[in-house]
Image 1 (cartoon, helix red, strand yellow):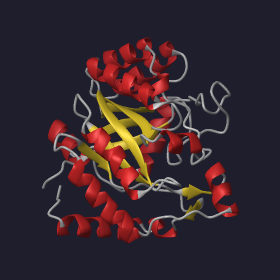
Image 2 (cartoon, helix red, strand yellow):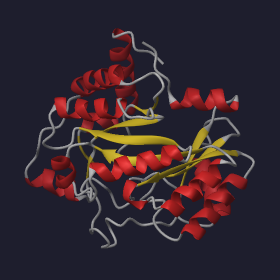
Image 3 (cartoon, one colour):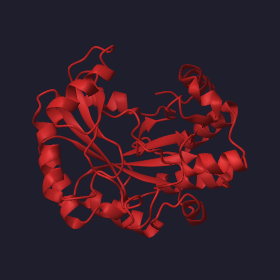
Image 4 (tube, helix red, strand yellow):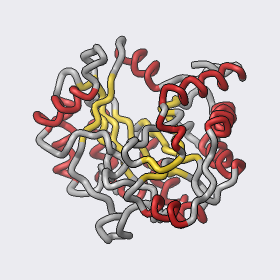
Length: 296
């Protein structure tokens, strides 16, 4: 079985390797500012899951900083990636102007916006749809799990029905949707994790992309404090690679694989420590998938 990677999809769309530039929009999150909660999701760091993003500055200053982070890689085509916090939370006109400015740069070939399903009011969806008519836009939704007990435990702050409504409206507007899933949430069984992926595999219209993310327990987070008080089980590398292979087998070919794991800042990582050796992890994932005949 072959699966499509996001890198390959971008290369097919633009005829060259495309690199992500992690940028900041200056947004916060309703799960941090008291609107629905404070402190954010329990696994979320102070960087709002965007620890590698450029600081919030005018784009003319952010872009060179973000380019420096990928300077060791050759290329002149980039995706503007707004990952930190909730990037459709706030004044629609300000965000529209910011994202439109990002797309005005010749080297920026598309836009990726990370957000929450409960921060996609009709005007926000229309704003993203307008931008999508200029250059391709991907909307990334942090679902993490379909299981309400797990979502309540990490303080997600919205129900699965909210996700389903946002997903339907985004797809109706012609936008590409990518869903984030965290594997290894405390209390979830292996089968529950597969149930989340199976649910996403059966979405209609078909899901455009998925990010499969290992749970990182980080210093300075509520989850990190919980783990230090009373450690909960975390997956071994072998268990994770086996689970990822099973997840890939469930997904339709049309769903692009944006990520098979993730990067936890080494200075903050508490567990699992094996995940800090990214090269080793990627090689193990490749070996396990190839053994199953699953190749990009």
